Amino acid sequence: MKSKFLFPAWYSIVGYLLTVPGFILGYLYEFNDYKIPGFGFEMRKSSDLILNKFENFTNELAVFLVIIGLIFIAFSKRKKEDELSAKLRLNALYWSIMFYYIVYLIGYIYTMIGEIPIIEEHFSTINLFTPLIIFIVRYHYLLAINKDSYLVPKLKFLPYKPFKQLSMALSILSFIVLGIFLLKDMESAWFTPFTNVLYFVMISSTLAWAFSKNKIEDELTMQLRLESLQMAVYFNYAIILIATLVFYSIDYLVVLLIAQFSVLFFFVIRMEYINYKNNHLLKTVEGRFES
Amino acid sequence: MKNTIRIQRAIKNITQAELAEMIQVSRQTINTIESGKYVPSTVLALKMARVFDKPVEEIFELEEMDYS
Image 1 (cartoon, rainbow over the protein chains, first blue to last red):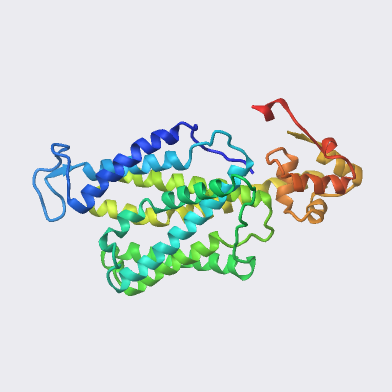
Image 2 (cartoon, helix red, strand yellow):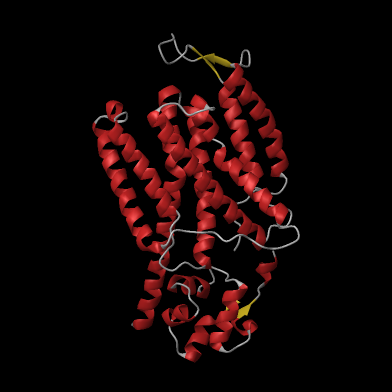
């Protein structure tokens, strides 16, 4: 197994230098309503119900610092990046994505019923960073316990039968039905119990799809899982960062919602695509031998 | 890393599918290893060596770029 798409080792120091001030700034903004004076400008002619005349960029700055910082910490090479660290990376990515979605789904059930205890309306803000934070904690924990021994905990996946095909069908079906409902009437369709449940089914079945075995699960599959999970996380944060720059208020929240499931969708689509490509290669090779 | 899997298979007269079956991986995996796109683990390399009845070094060979 090999690590790919990583930053040079010294990026992790830069990462900490960005993340720590970012977190402090973000905390002050979120809980003390602090805004950097003068850090913003007049965006619009007048204020309305949702959009302010003046836009202050304190929160955007905090999001940027924390996300870029955490990505640097999470995805910079170790001094000696080798096959073991690649294995640990896969393990940590696996845990972070799974935990993130399980927490997200539990949070989602709470918001359907009422408020989430303790963190309440800060849920979506905190959830922005959870995949990266779980990854960093899990990865460093694995590195620490692996100092003397080289035991890497084995990853568990749902069995191929019946989970893979069932979850795949359910995921695609709920995606299409939800899409039809939202295209018909974006505003009101979103808040009905039916679409809420449908969304929940879509996320959980895609999660099951991502974490169920292939027909034949071997080390190449594991390598592809590592690459795809990592690319999915990059993709997800690219969306969030671009959204932070370009969109405001409601539009921003819509993009954040897309970002909530972009990791899973990117992952399953890339896995299926590579699978298709390798199959295609195989077919051409076999065709050449037969003729 | 270079490999001679295709030649070894020809000597033993086995297909990619049969080799895949013998060492419990997918046919895709055999194909990507054979075309040099994927470097197998030691376990897999040794399993192949056992199938072909050859030392691993005769199946896989390091190249200059493996050190960079």
